[in-house]
Length: 389
Image (tube, rainbow, N blue to C red; front, side, top):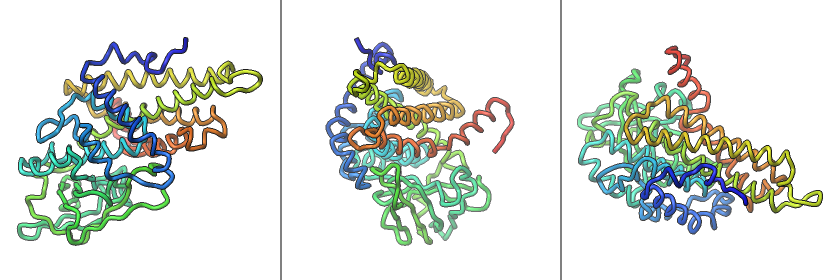
């Protein structure tokens, strides 16, 4: 009798009723609304914007935020939702992560009551789409070096600069834009900038070979005038955007394991069905050895995610632990996708089997929300007290 990946993880004895319900509901949504279309969406470089409303109805937008029309589910429930979404495609989970953990969280954590009441219910419902403008063409891992500036002009601010690698940039109704008011990185402030504002333009990034079913682009700001009421009043310095990134990394860490689980399941299924030398390749020791390595790493990463999720629910999860989780799980997911692709031979590169699509997407997750190298340095800093970056 074969044992499933989830039986190896042992979810059922560790999850509450809400968590199981959220997981199962999201799983059905992915099976019905994502997997039948994702190969064509990926091939054509298309994100179906209308899916935002369906995700709002599903309750995964702003899922682990409380109040203001947000579902307010637990952090583990949200992690499981991300897991199932990325089982479908990393681009889908990325959209939900950016909407929830970056754009909405920035308003929820650092905004005024007026800002929260105006934006969050609409974003939770998927009626308004948000993006998060921090990364710049020449400043990714070092956001403190950003060149985007906010200049006070009477009761308003004028924003000038450019942002790059922004999920949902060209489809967003609102952008959370981070800018400095001086050369000092501690002068950084966040602003809510509505689409259509004079001087604001967005463009898609062409010829992507990863995250093709995700909308990714850039923002250009040329003296974009916003009122002071559009400034996030509680966000001052690097603490504002970094808190958002730290929040988003949690969802990424759960999500990539969904892609890893898909690849492992597909490779296992394929190995049983694929006949070579008079029997299934699943009988070959080298094949079983690779499957054993994959399941071992996926189980360990899944239990770490759950453990850290429980700590997050107790408000005890520290930033270096999130870096460890993101670095570890992204490494494991990419390894699983690459291994599955190899086990499936030429069939592994086709859209029909999906694993090459996951492998290409996971090359992006390995880099975004903090590169593997930066998270290594965060861990080194935490262990030694010595900063190497």
